[in-house]
Image (cartoon, rainbow, N blue to C red; front, top):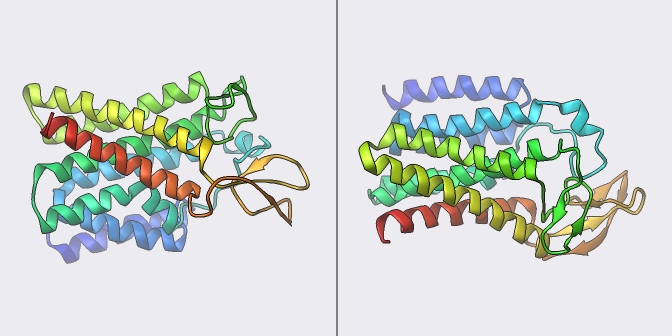
Length: 263
């Protein structure tokens, strides 16, 4: 299929996602560009992995949406992923595609799979874990905290993270590899994606920027909450949630490539 025809088809898909409020306008444009790069580098198989992540994550964000909005934590009504969120979760895939187009090497495919496995693990953990009946446990504070606080985990969230990571690893192993090699990739991608999510949790609990709402008193990631400016609680100004997501997914992708190719 030619690039022009494919671009139109992908554009229709992205437009549908925009109309369904899965993406904002900036997110739709970013997703279209990312999809074109991944398709050019890895064909329909690579694009299928990217779509698997996006569709599953979007559906999970809609699941129990009303119940999630009733939880007084970081969870807030989603208006769809914007460009920043698209690149935070899919930036590793974009650079993998761009890298492969410029310097073809198997490493870039592994970077694609590992980064998307971590992105899926993180999104699944967030969207499912917040519905846990028990309060999550903060790894560094060693205490129970409110749902949605960065740095906290729950059994339900960890299970969802593992499932999300291994869903991507299964798809990648089936679409791109055969025999014993496929099993090695399945394990490496799944494990790297899961522990990339653990890294995300650790960074989120230490240096990620967060605020305290002056009205309701909860910890939030936004500078404004309840209609007023929040006071800074912790973290470095440049380390936002999007930054943490990108670093963690890239680290998982790099770890996957190193594990399989050089160890």
